[in-house]
Amino acid sequence: MMITVLSGGIGGAAFVRGLLDEVGDEAEVTVVGNTADDLWLFGLKVCPDLDTLMYTLGGGIDEERRWGRSDETWSVKEELAAYGAQPTWFGLGDRDVATHLVRTQMLQAGYPLSDVTRALCVRWQPGVTLLPMTDDRVETHVVVENEGQRRAIHFQEYWVRLRAAVPAHDVVMIGIEEAKPAPGVIEAVMDADVVLVPPSNPVVSVGPILAVAGVSDALRTTRAPVIGISPIIAGGAVRGMADQLLTALGVGVSAGAVGVRYGARKTGGVLDGWLVDTGDADQLGPLEEAGLVARAVPLYMSDAETTRTLAADALALAREVGVAR
Ligand code: FO1
Image (cartoon, rainbow, N blue to C red; front, top):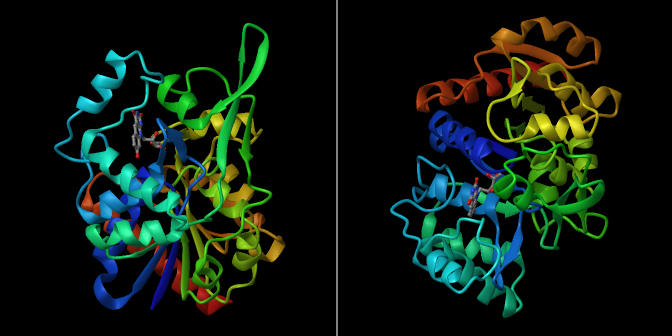
């Protein structure tokens, strides 16, 4: 069985780990990773969501932070700060810098990001095929207001330096119009038996993937059932800043509103099914009215067992929808 997952960083990586526990070697899993979080820092290309996926699935992640490397040290960061080098707000770990050095060296030698990602995964053996959504440069910037002046700052500055503590007035994906899907991305959606949209941030993680040319059309036409999982539980984001960003886009911060925003394939959207938390069962009505097959199951991924059960629930809904279609 071929399963394709469209994923951001932390939440998506946790879900995929549970999915791999559930399917074992019964399925080939391809993960299309968001690259709009990426940034150039001190001449190095940092790909936070690809690295979070690679480290989490390859056993190198720091389990506390859920980003960056385990057993990390920060000498490079401290030395940069000693020089007064800006920015100082982004956590560059020494082990993590090695990943960015290898990636940057390969990019400068002319390799596309998809080749670089494949090369890095030779070491980490994540147990999935990890594809960047595109080999082209895309960067999410967030429009904030400062003393009456509106300006766009990189998503990482909004999240890491400002902790999303100021309102976002808009979210823009620089370069998305020119971005082409990376090799294998469209095929991964079209040839899948199941496509899953995990509880990643719908605005800055899944949104960019859907905005890459051809991806949403592939989701609308694939024979595979497409099942999504709400990143919002009881009106709040489980982690990160999805609430601020959904509000910026005028989307309600609820499992129902996010499901309706993705939309049902039968009405031009990208999903067949949508899982909400048991506590949000009141949202099932509007979701069904919007054409989605919606179910309420425990969504909170508190440990390996609950995450594996969530993955099993998503696959069960895929089977139910697959038969129905
Ligand atoms: N998140 C933080 O909250 N603080 C950091 O200093 C930080 C550094 C960092 C370095 C490498 C990397 O791959 C991820 C990093 N993240 C950090 C997470 C990053 O902001 C992610 O893009 C978000 O967590 C959204 O996925």
